[in-house]
Each structure stands twice: as C-alpha cells, then as structure tokens.
Length: 167
Picture 1 (cartoon, one colour):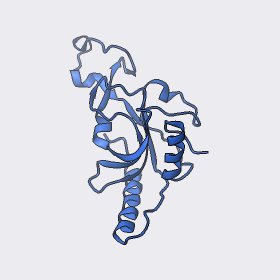
Picture 2 (picture 1 turned 30 degrees about the vertical axis):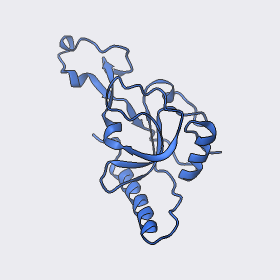
Picture 3 (picture 1 turned 90 degrees about the horizontal axis):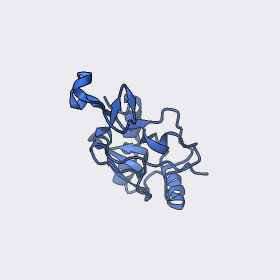
Picture 4 (picture 1 turned 120 degrees about the horizontal axis):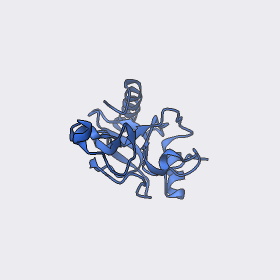
C-alpha cells in the first residue's frame, strides 16, 4: 500500500508537468506550493507543534513521471531496512530528490499492534512471519497544509537547519 493516495499523486504529477513545461519552453521554473508532508512516525517528530522543527521530514511538491522520484525539501535518511534510524533528519535540509519506494520500505518493529517498541516479540509465539512483524515507519500528515511555496520552506529550513513551517 502506498503512502500517497491517487489525488495526491495527481497533484504532484501536475506540479512536475508545470515545471517540465517551463523548462522545455526556456521559462523560469514555477515556485510551487508543496502538496504533502511525509515524516518519521517515531520519536519526537510525532509530538512536535507545527512551528517547531520536524526531524525526519520531507515536504514534497512534485513527482516525476516514473511514479517513484519525489522532489521537495528533504531532511531524512532514506535507507531501506528494519531498524533504520529515523528519529532525526540529517540537520541539512535541502531541495532535492527522494525515492518514494525507499521511503515506503523503511520499517520499524511492531509489538501487539503498537508501533515503536524497542524489541519485536518472538515471532513464533505470535504465529507471524518475520516480515509481518514490521510496519511502516513513515506517515503522511493528513492535516498538514502548505503555508507557502517550496522555496519559502527551503529558506526557512536553511536558517533553522531543520524543516520548519515558514513565517
């Protein structure tokens, strides 16, 4: 199951089409409003008020035609595999690209249906396969709405050294 719904993907692809059209016509690329915020669903990121820094976060404005490559303000490790450290970003947010499939592949242990336990339970005791003992560590903030363009987010993040909401 994808983190992004069809409507979000359509908006991201439309933004990418606008950018590619401007590039092909030799015009300045549009400064687009971001569409979605993806964040680490563990650690401090889940408890931060909106104006504070957001560790392990991506504010995304575009999706390439390949359906996997995202463009936006990225400050998260995007390494696949269980137990990936996602509670903090790199502290160097920048405009760039990230792979949706890599973000979706990041997993964390699950115990009794709850995310964030330190150790997974014995798999045999619960009758579950190894792969079923992990859940996605990344989430989409469904209540988030952009408060500016992607460049405004980048400027605010450069100053704060973390992804923050622009003033």
